[in-house]
Image: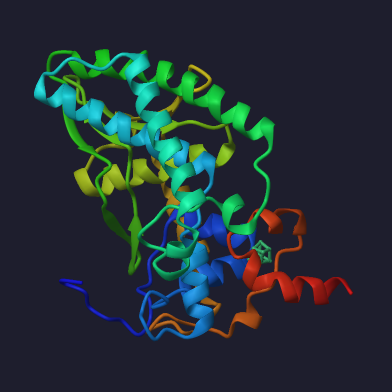
Amino acid sequence: MSGYVRREYPEWSWSFSRQQTFMACPRRYYYHYYGSHNGWEFQAPREAALAYRLKKLTNLYLVLGEAVHKCAEQMVEAVQMGYALPTAETVEGEIRRVLRQVWKSSRDNQALFLQRPNRVAMLHEFYYGMEIRDEVIEKINARASASAKGLVASPIWSMLAEEGAEIVSYEQFDTFPIGDTPVYAIPDLLFRTAHEQWIIVDWKTGEEVEDNKEQVALYALYVQKKHGVPAESILGRLEYLNLGETRELTFTQDELEQVKAYALDSMADLRSYLRDPVQNIAKPKEEFPLTEFRQQCPWCSFYELCQEELAESVS
Ligand code: SF4
């Protein structure tokens, strides 16, 4: 692996999804951010190797979201190059191609996944031998069609075509500091209008949830820190593609300060689970309790690692 630098411990960072993972289940947080570290190595301990493998599991909702984001990214590139945008049928065809590919990989590559989990896609249900319910397939089918139509019909394309509009970044991996911590911020699309309005676009393929707004507020803080933009010049657009709806979000400086305070509180809380905050060494996994909301466990990637303990805790 060229350029690979081995680290004994993972690097400390913060993201909104990191906090969400912790809130959903501290043990899941442990396996995702610590227990799976270096689990890709040939001689990794059994538990680290298993945690790394399980971390690679996916589900149809994630695959759909990634396929739609990829199509959106290609459409932004087409706009930049001055090419025509694809039709909704073409976009839907591409989304379905990706879904079929992941389904086929999950059905045919189980042995390979056990050995090389980073090489092939594997759906949670195939790995755990669970049935994918008809309602889920119907929902994914409906969302694939609606998201393709919503993406092609999005008002973003005409906004980008306006004179003076300029794409700043799309799907660009970046961090910015809050305190001494690098914070991940990867807006789906960031562009600037001729009137110096900075627009953050977040494509969504699921239901509307409050957390989405907080995530965009964090992106707004990133735009302010990175580009020196006043809060009132930043507009967030949550594009709910399968619902055909947009939520526009404006921000005050106070609200951006609140996001920063939230991130700092979360960092302090998460760091209290570290044995060594300098090297980012976690306390033993027993310090990360299993969730109390056990209904989620059969759908959690790390179920295999928790099964025994879950059974013991109910008996
Ligand atoms: S299976 Fe349940 S307890 Fe274990 S990590 Fe997942 S959500 Fe947490």
